[in-house]
Image 1 (tube, rainbow, N blue to C red):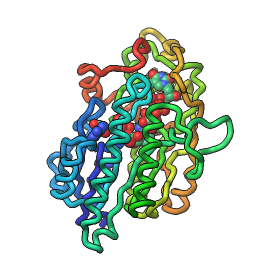
Image 2 (tube, rainbow, N blue to C red; image 1 turned 90 degrees about the vertical axis):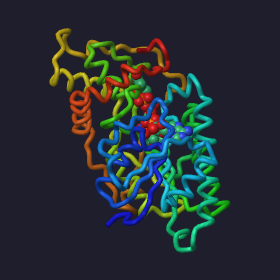
Image 3 (cartoon, protein in one colour; image 1 turned 60 degrees about the vertical axis):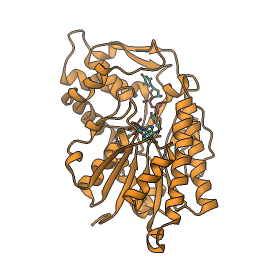
Length: 354
Ligand code: NAD
Ligand code: TDX
């Protein structure tokens, strides 16, 4: 019985990773889940099929920057645990318009910490001892690696984009609330996720959708930037495990040991699509188009996940090739999910790169 009679707040539960976390909690644990989400452009309640009719699930449409509303939610639902995923998450958008990133990622995290602290201090000693807040962050806070080396939990912070700087700030706030006020927090820094329900602006879904439409596939710069890919369901399981067994005050790096260049990822997507739906225009690799680079584009990310593997026994189960094939297949089979987003229109940033 995992999380029996426990209520877990999940902020950002209508987003890509938050929805995977909620699907996992509802399917594989006994937790009650309260999804707190403002429903920005990136949110989608269709990523939570069946959740609305589950007696263990509640949805609260709220912004994490609104202290009085957060306070009411804490007092109404009395959570045992908090998983904090709500954020502005797209690097290109942070370059075009950083204000929202500062607001949600920094002020929002600050507000959540303050309200968590107020609530935690009012709990009975028994419940206070059980409470913890898991802050979900990114490997981008560590900046860019050269050709060698891996990010560990002690790698110094060196964020390069407004997005990663805002996430780094939020990590520092979480650390400070632990050190100064004793709030029981745990932190994770994860590499690039991919999988079902990924918002179409991100590299992998963008290329699948463009590839299906036989349109140009915009690769930034020389395509040799490296990301370390993790299947989103492996991340959801890692987060649940850290929430349950992670040591308070600790950081855990999460990654799948799947370093690939962007060009390799895009070429593989082309080949997979050619197998599933051959294009009358010929092999899709011909549609790859090198476009101007992202400003401040980090060259390489790679995670050393040995701490979470050794301490908590977590392993990434999905290998990248099979995970990518599953993901391409999912997007082919679930067109209504992403077509509705495309039809609604979303402002793809770095305009002109479509
Ligand atoms: P996402 O953009 O898909 O989802 C974010 C969710 O947060 C959305 O549902 C949105 O409506 C909600 N949200 C945004 N602002 C809010 C606010 N002010 N109040 C309440 N809700 C708000 O993001 P994601 O890719 O699922 O990422 C989730 C978390 O994981 C983020 O904190 C991100 O930094 C972190 N992360 C992401 C990755 C990745 O590869 N996607 C990797 C490592 C860490
Ligand atoms: O059209 C594109 N062409 C391209 O070459 C897009 C959208 C991206 N890229 C490149 C930029 C990156 O090197 O592909 C790589 C991946 O880009 P994104 O999907 O935008 O992800 P990234 O910038 O690496 O950040 C992601 O992983 C870490 C998430 O968006 C972050 O929220 C997370 O913290």
